[in-house]
Length: 38
Image: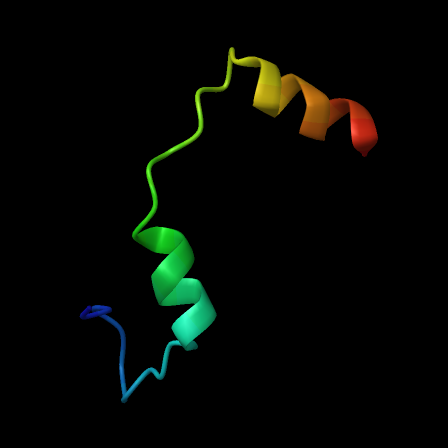
């Protein structure tokens, strides 16, 4: 991954793993459940 900002930018492995997952449907049940919890 390359971020187009000055300097080296380390990215934690957890963030790289999260970015590699399929996006969540904002109209799906999973999103609604998360939204209601906050």
